[in-house]
Length: 409
Image: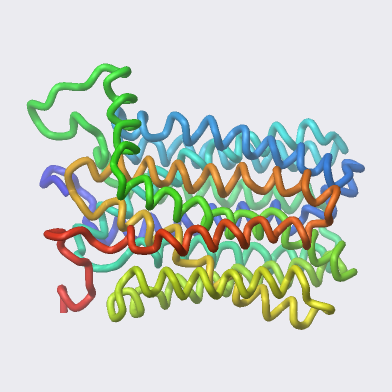
C-alpha cells in the first residue's frame, strides 16, 4: 500500500469485514423470503427464473464495468456505488413484493445485482491488497464474513417467516441498516487501490487501452485455469444461495420457515469453512485443500439431489457449504500472487466468479422446470468436478512469496 494512503491495513480489513457481512445479510434477506415473494407475485418456477434473471442482468453490467472502473477510479469508488445500488435494489424488491409485481422485483434485483457484482470486485481487489500488506491469509476470512452474513440474514428470515413479518417491512429495514453501515465502511477504505494512475507520474490510460489490458490477462494460461476453477466453485455457492430454500420446500415438502433455517445452516457451514480454511491452507497448501473441498461439495450436492428425506439432505447441505467455501476466495488469492498487474487479474477472476454466481442459477431454474430442481443441481456437481481437475493452477508460481500466518509471527 502506498505511503500516502491514510487507513491502516487493519482498519481496511475491518471495513471489508463489514462490507462483506452486509452484502451477505442483504442476499440472505432476499433468498430467505423467496417462497413468500413467489407467492406474492404468483410466479411459477420458470417465472421465478426470469425474476432472478434480473439479478443476473444487473450483475453482468456490474462485473463488465467493474474492472475498468477500478483501474480508472480505484476500488473504493466501486465499492461505494455498489453499496448504493444494493440499498436501492433491496428497497425496490420490497416495493415490488408489496405491489405483487414480478417485473418490479426483477428491476430491484437488477440494481442489487449491479451493486453486488461491481462492489464485490472492488472489495476483492482491496482484500488481496490487504492480504499482501499483512503478509497473511485474509481473503477467505473476508468471504467468511459474507457467509456469516448469509447465516445471520437467514436466521432473521426464519424469524420473519415464523411471525409473518411483511416482506416489504423486512427488506426495507435491511436496506436502511445497509445504508448506515456503508457510510462507515467506505470512510475506512483506501482511495486509490487498483487505480492505474495511483502512483505519481504515471499517465492515465485511455479507456480503450484500459479495457484491452483487462481482457489481456485471459491470454495467460494460469489465469485461464484459475477462471475455470472459479466458474464451478462459484456456481456451487450461487446455486445454493438462489435455490436452496425452494429445493427444500418443493423437493422435501418443508415449510418456508424450516427451509430458511436450512439455508442459514448452509451459510454457517460456508463461514466455518472460510474462517477455518486459513489454517489448512497455510499447513497443507492450496492445491490439496482445493481438491478436498471440491470432493466435499460433490458429495454434498449428490446427497441433496438423491436423499430420500430431509435429514440426509441436511448433511448434504453441510458438506456442500464447507466444500464450496474456499474455491472462490482461494482463486482470488492465487490471481493476486504476482504483484505486477495483480488488480487486473483479481478483477478478471472475480468477474468470472460472479458471472457463474449470478448467471448460472437462473439457467438452473429453466432446467428445474422440466427436471425438478433436485436433478438440475447435478449440473453444478459436474462443473465442480471439472474445477477439481484444474486445482494445480492455484499453486503459487515459482518465485512468488507464499502467504502464511507464520511469516508474521
